[in-house]
Length: 494
Image (tube, rainbow, N blue to C red; front, side, top):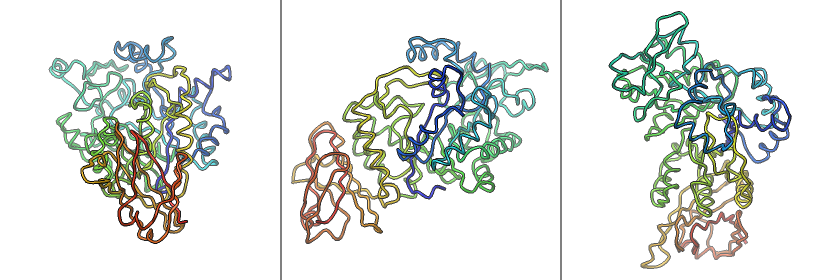
C-alpha cells in the first residue's frame, strides 16, 4: 500500500475529458492526448491517485438502451440542453469487455498513461464491476451459465428485472438484469451468477488481468456479491468472492489497492475481506443532513476502521456538492470531510463548483461558469492537505465542552487535533457546523501547554491569536464562532 497514511484521490470522467480535448484539437482525442502538463498540475495539487472512470469497452446493446430509456433520456436532456445521440455512448458500468476501446487509444495508450502518471508520482485506479456485465458481453454466447436465468413466472412478477436475449447460435435465453435487492434491475446489464463456481473463478481471472494494467480498482457496488446479500437478492448463497479475489491479486501485485463502493453499513465487512478503502457514505449523508451530533459520533470509531474509509463530498453517483451544500455549509463540510483520517476523495468539477452531475452514460459535460470563491477555497484546502502533518500525522477527535453553565451551543462543534511528534507540528481543526453562533471550550490533548503563550495561526484564513497555555490546558481553548465558521489552527509556542 501507499507509504502515506492519508493519500488523496481525484476522479476523472475519462470520456468527458477526451471530448473536451477533441474539441480543442479538432480531432478525436485518445488517452495519449492527455497533456503531461495537466498530469503535472494534478500531482502538484497533491494527488496520489487518479481514478479514470469508464475506460473499458461498452457495447452497442447498452448504448441503445441508454439512448432510448425515457427516464434516463429526461435526465440527460436536463444536463445537456443541446443533447445529441453522440453524447450518449452508454454506461461505463455496462461493460462488454475489460479491454480499452480503440477510440480511447487501446491498451497500449492506457499503459503509456500509467507510465506518465508514475513519472509524476501518481498511481492509476480503474473500474471493476463485479455484479453484472453488458447485454452483449461475449459470455452470453460462450458461457450462458455464468448468468442468472429466469422463468416466465419471474418475468411476470418482475418485468423490469428480466429480459429475453437472442443469441447468434440460437436458443433465446431469459436472463436477469443486474440489480440490488431494493430497486429494479439496470436494463443495460445482465446479472452474474456467483452461485456457479465457474463464474466466481472467471471473475477472479478478469480481476487479475485488470490488475496488470493499473495500480488499484474501485469496485462498483462491492457488497452485492457478499453471500448474504446475494442470497437475499437471488435466493442463492454463493461461496465468498472477495477474500480469494483480493488475495489472488496481491499474490501477484503486493501493493495493489482495492476500494469498495459499499452501503448498508457493510464497510467494516469489506475491509475485513481485503479492501484498503470503503466508501464513507454515512459521513456524507450526515453532513448533507446537517446533523452535527451524528457526525461527531461517527468519528468515535477506531482508527483501524476510519483510516480505511474513503471520504468524499461528491462523485459520479451523488449530486454535485455545490448544488447540495449551500455556500458556507459547503466549505464547512469540506473541512470536516477532508481533514479527517482516511482517503481524501475528490471529483472532477468539484473545485470549480459545478452544479450539474454528469451521468456515466454521457460523454460530454455542460459548460458552467467557475465559482471563483469555491475554487479559491479548494486551492487553499489542497495546499493545507499537502502538509506532512495531515498526510502522516496522528489524528484524534476532541471534546467540546460548554463555554459556560447553561450554554448548550457547544453541541454544534466538530473538533480534531493533529500532531506529528517528530517535528512537533500540531494543529487544531474546529468547525461550528450549525446555522447559529456557538461557543465552546475545546479540550486539547497536548500535555506541554502550561506555562507559556502559544501562537494560533489559521491555515485557511487570516485569523491569528496568542493564547495562554496554562488556561488552555486547564479550561480548554475558548471558541466563539459564527454559523458554519471554521478554523484550522497551527499551534506553535511563543
